Length: 231
Image 1 (cartoon, rainbow, N blue to C red):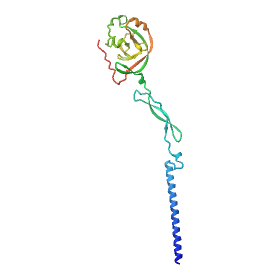
Image 2: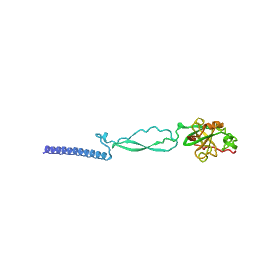
Image 3: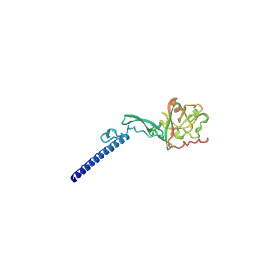
Image 4: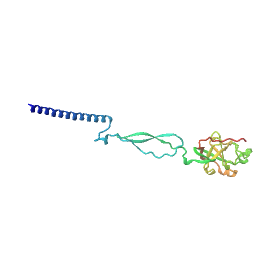
């Protein structure tokens, strides 16, 4: 009887261990399934399919280098973004090409200047003598400056179009360098200019020309600073 009881006890113990082992196995399986379901809900793959299900880092196309901008103005430029689902449009800000590139800058009176506009104008010529200026041929321009200002390279314009103190460059005049608007003329109205030459003969040789005139401005952020002198 004693041996039978011991045998039955051992059998019960073994059965209990087996049940416990199966329970642990089932519990571990349930936990594993739960983890897999959680990862799937988060969009993250398991180790078997991680390569295909992990998010792909977007790859942006390269924008070309843009020249230095004149201001902080920006323009939207569309580039392509590669994603796991395919290709989609994205907006990337790139500097706008300025009206006046840095390479177009020049110096005038020790200050940097840049082109800001181009106007088609009718250009004639005059001399500072009585044959062109009549009784007002006193060697002083309407702005109060001498006709020898800027080495004698200056122009007369309509102040409503180009105020006194403006800077322009004219093809064929003073090697195309920017020159100041320092004078006015009774016949110089609208889009007309009168370029100054030292003699009447040279002025007549210029004739009448229709050319593209470039208007310049100071690029150092300071006011023009032009002051009309009293005559």
